[in-house]
Image (cartoon, rainbow over all chains, first blue to last red; front, side, top):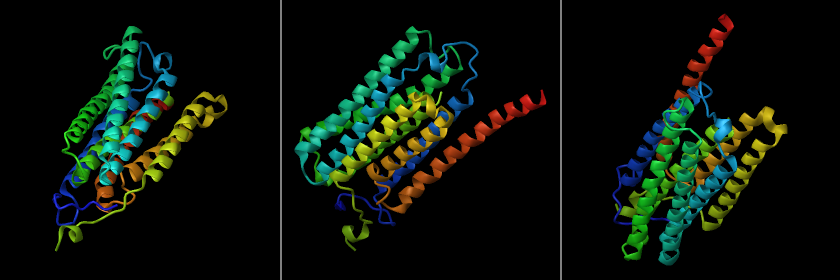
Length: 195
Length: 107
């Protein structure tokens, strides 16, 4: 399916300038999360007081959150495909489903953080708490921005202001959402499964 | 030159491909969690988890973010900072844990 609409602005390379700028932004985000994950790994196992990761991390709960975020990525590409073919009914459904799954993920993160604080782990308890909350909190902030962005698109779709001509806008939103998903794929493995 | 001919067009995967990739992602996640709980895998836990995680990462980037079919310049814009981030991570780990090992050997 091609989507070269006359509303797009192309660079001299024939690429959409918004998409090119967004890939450059995602590249910079790789460095941000790379530095946060590096910090977590460097300080791993160096906490002098508990709670320690193996005492507090809830793998079954986080596995469900991971599944939820993966499914939200699937909903996002289905939304893009629907908008590109002009099927706005399903476009709206998939967009809302993506935002809803994002909200479920955020709800899970709030529950997890509350549970950790109740068990005595805060951002200032030890090195694990500090690096864990900064890393997962930064990711959660990105998910929050993504949910707000998706809900904005959904409202525009409800108002009839989103159609196949704006497919690039949905694609760029999708790039952001999928990036948030791939960052979580790494965090789930590095923080939760490799203890 | 028209807008269309000026654009580097690309073919996005169909909904069927998206669903298949989604199914593979779910299977890989189940395998990850399964490997974590099976004691027999604990000796090879880290490499197995890293391979599974990298496969999931690549699938999302290639199919859901369309890098497989999109312009190679986007791959360049994403790949170079990603490699830099991984390089920084490996260098920091080597610096910190390498220093620990050396201190351990000396003392």
